Length: 623
Image 1 (spheres, one colour):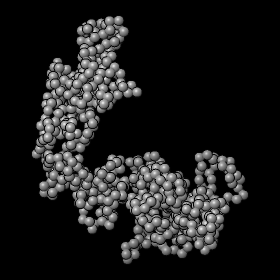
Image 2 (cartoon, one colour):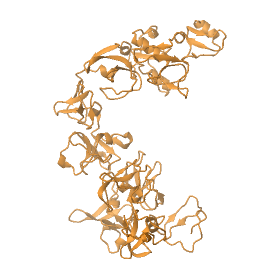
Image 3 (cartoon, helix red, strand yellow):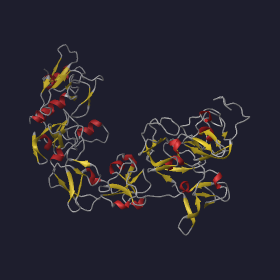
Image 4 (tube, one colour):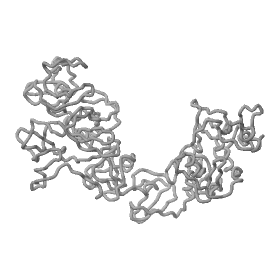
C-alpha cells in the first residue's frame, strides 16, 4: 500500500485506477512488479458479491469486464458511460460503476465515510465552457437537481449532494401510499413518478417494489397543502394526495396517481397539465388553437381529432379553432414539440393573404381580386371556355369555383387563390414557414411529380411542396368521387392502393375507416377528367370495368392489356379506355412551352406535346 508521497514517487505516469477508471488517490495498492496496475483501497476491498439494500431481489456481482458484447455499459444510477469493472445484475440487466454502487451503499447505511473529510460549503463551479463533467458536478448526485447553497461536495471523488439528500431517511411513510413504507432505492424498472408522472433515468427514488410504485425525492417532500396557480385557469389548483382512478379534465386521458383539483369548477387534472398553454400556433392548422376544459356538443359538426382521426370527448379538455369548428386531442396537438409554438395573444399571429379584394357581391363573396402572383385582376367564374383549361396554381382541370383573367389565359381555383403567402404544414419538419412561389420547375417532395405551377418552398432546406399536396394533406376528412365514405390520411400506413395496386410502402395513404379502401397520395390527386388526342371527348376517371369480355381489357393508346380492377380513363360515348399513365403522360403538371433544366443535360429543355420526328434520347433510348 502506498501513501500520498510514495504514490507520487512510484506512479510512473499512470494515474487511473485499473478497476474503476478514476484518478488514483492515496491510500492505494499497486503491483510490486511496477507494471502500472493501481487500485484504490476501496476498489481493492470491494466485495465480489454485493447485497444492496436498494436492489433487494438479486445480488450484484462484481465483474472485471462489462458483460455486454460492446465492452461498454451505462451505469443504472448515474447513467454515465463505463468500460471498466462493473457491478452487474444479470436478472434485471442492471449495471453500476463501483463508485456508484459503494457510495449508494454508504447512503443506505447512513454512513457517509466518503464525505467525512469535506466540510459543508458552497461549490461555486463555473460551467460556462460547456464541459459536461463540470455541468454534472453542479448537480446533486442523489436527486440530479441543481445544487443548493450549502452542499456536501467532494472534488476528489466527484460526489455532490444536497445536505437534505445526504441525510435522506432510508424508509418513509407517505400519505399517498399507506399500504407499505417507501424505501430509498434505484428506479430499476424506469417507472414514472406517481405524483408528477415524469420518468427519471438516474438518481434515487422512494419506491415500493411489490406495488411497482415510485416517487421522486422532491415530489415525496411536497406539502399535501400545495397550491399551484397558472395562467390557463382562473382558479388555483390544490394537490390531491389520493391514488384514485380519474380522467384528466385538461387532456382527456386517464390517470391513477396524484392529481390536482379546482374545487370551484369541479376540475381534476394531471400535474403536468397545469402548465398547458392556453393558445398555440400549430402546423396542423392555419388559425390559433385555444385550450378549453369542455365544449357544448352542438358547437361542432365533426368530433374527430384532425391528427389521429379518433373521436374527441368534448366533456374533457381539447384544443379547438373557433373559426373552423375543428378540434384536436391535447396529447396529439402537444406530442411533437417542433409542431407548435406558444402564443400569448391570438391577435399576434400574422395572416398574409395572397389576394386583395377589389369587389364583392351582395353575399360578401369576392368577385374581383388582385393576386400577388399575377399582373392583372381576376374575376370570379363562370367563364365561357374556362373549363377547357387547367388551374395555373395546381395544374388540375378547372372546376367551380374559380377565378380567371379576362386579359390573358390565366386561371386559379378559388381554393388555390386563397392560400396564404406563407404557410406552416405538418408534413414539413423545418421550423420556418413555407413561401408561395410560381413559374419555377420543381420536384414535389410529397408526390414526386415534376411541375412548374405554384408551390410552397422552404427557405431553409429548399424543399418544395406542390399545391395539390398542400391542399389534400390539409388535416380533415376528404371526399373522393369514387368512394361513398370520407377518407383520412394516415402518414405511416402501409398497404395496397385500390387505384393502382401498388404498395404505399410507408409513405402514407388515404384510408376509409368504414371499409377496406385505400388510395395513395398520387392516385388521390388524379384529375377526374382529362383530354387526350385518342378521343374527341373528355375522358372520365373510372374505378371498375363492367365489360365482361376479357379481350376488351386493353388500352386504346398503347394497345397493351389492362387490369380491369385498376382505375383507368374512359369515354362512354366512344367506349375508349386507356391507362392512367398513357392519358396523363410522364409530366402531366408541366406547362407546354415552359423550360425545364435537367441536371444531367447541359441545355435547357422545352416541354412539348408531340415527340414525333425527334431523335432518340441518349439516356433511355426512347424518342
